[in-house]
Image (cartoon, rainbow, N blue to C red; front, side):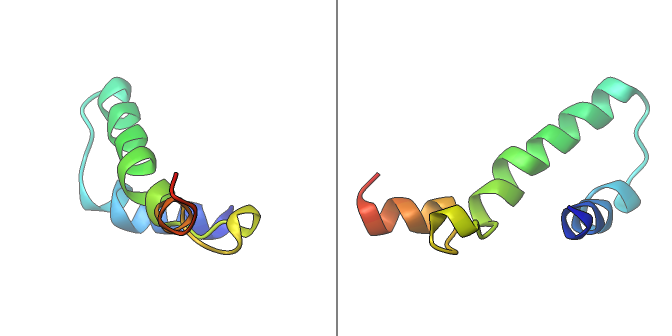
Length: 59
């Protein structure tokens, strides 16, 4: 979790200023959904990313 938070801060939080909480929330959701989750390695997926897992097993 610490690694995720560090990456999140470096990639999104420190690079811009958010005018509202809703704007920050939307930006963080977008980061998690479109950048972090598809590329992040998961031990439950054989240490592959969700995209790799789908390619391996035709999902």
